[in-house]
Amino acid sequence: MKTRITELFGIQHPIIQGGMHFVGFAELAAAVSNAGGLGLITGLTQRTPELLANEIAKCRALTDKPFGVNLTFLPTVSSPDYPGYIKAIIDGGVKAVETAGNNPQKWLPMLHEAGVKVIHKCTSVRHSLKAQAIGCDAVSVDGFECGGHPGEDDVPNFILLPRAADELEIPFVASGGMADGRSLVAALALGAEGMNMGTRFIATKEAPVHQNVKDAIVAASELDTRLVMRPLRNTERVLRNEAVDRLIAKEKALGANIKFEDIIEEVAGVYPKIMIDGAMEAGAWSCGMVAGLIHDVPTVKELIDRIMAEAEGIIRQRLAGFL
Image (cartoon, rainbow, N blue to C red):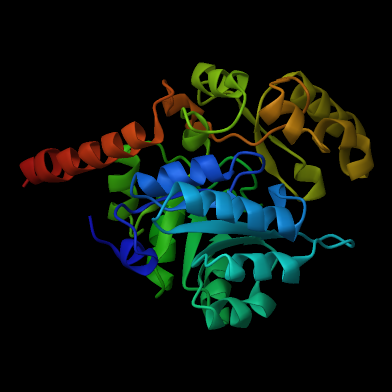
């Protein structure tokens, strides 16, 4: 399947693995790339640029196909060593970067000069247009369904994707609610050039997370996610658990007076405990509504092959049969 996204990144299938904290390690990124998609290492999961350089080298040893790095620009006072991370990406010969969070404009010249293609994560049409204006090569359009941070507009992909298609000239992929061949064909029909999957890739054999996490996603339905941190305008979609129930109770009790310090116990430093140790009640962790469409834990190759076969069947038989 050839789309503007497969051409841009030099990949076989228009499927990108989202950058996920304590999930996007070399093992998963390489598995996705080897299966014909674009795998991503999560940059900030690696605590220093040196560790990221090691992870890139590890991934390079596991695949000869294109892979990328996700780099989230955080609105924090004590900023990570972004020049160091970008140097590690460029020195490692990585040719694709997924940026997220704050505006990546100041880093684009350095990346483009090194021949790196940049896809920026956006939750609205206006942010997508800004990404296009500053020179991003593509965008990942995240609908309200997505795990992690859906923004504050609450527009689902059935509206958001065609709106993006109406306005954008650069290619974009659909993110949020993507799980199978149906998702891919729907995304293409709505104007996207491919899809980005996060939660679906956690429930694969190669995802280097605790089995408890994979089991929780398979067991969950589309009704089991909750939105937290909305009063702080930092909304995150997470899988419901005891910590999330506690967090929501605090939000209700404190109302507009809530501060980040009030919920720090439920959200700070929880990813290693959940993803590595499998302590499922340790805190809030990102998960999409798409959990309702996830019923097994295949290998990455089995998953991607199945998606592409299903997509081709829908296009060639079901849709063609209507005409």
